[in-house]
Amino acid sequence: MMKKFLFVLCMLTVALVCFPVMAQTIGEQDSGSTLIGLTSFTAIVALVSFLITWGMKYISFVGKNSLTKILCSIIIGILATLLAWWLGIADFLTGLPFLQAVIQGIYVGLSACGFYDLLKTFGLAVK
Image 1 (cartoon, rainbow, N blue to C red):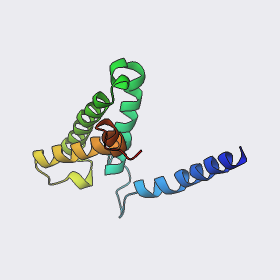
Image 2: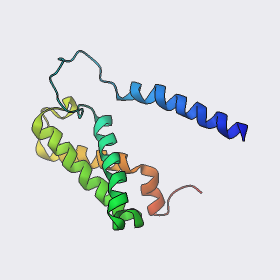
Image 3: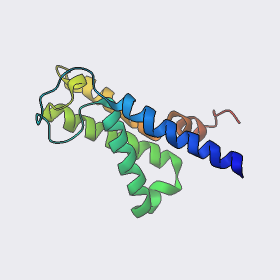
């Protein structure tokens, strides 16, 4: 029991220290230049993960089938990325044409649903 508690405590410490470092942006930014926090790839992935998790509570068919969860994650990822591209708030999307922004949205959706869930759906995950 104590080993499990220490493991969970260590994982929470790692999550609280490492994840904000990965989500930070490099360089100087204008204070107040953006009103919503979709300025990095990681932030858009976090938003899509939140929306999918929230949707699984209220929309029953999303949580039952893992393929449906993956498809919804990709669609919401594309929509969130196109919104950030259209508003011009994400630095990594500036100057990209429409189709490259859609491809970035697919990457966001796949990252949000997790590549392990994707591999598990098609039976390719290591057991």
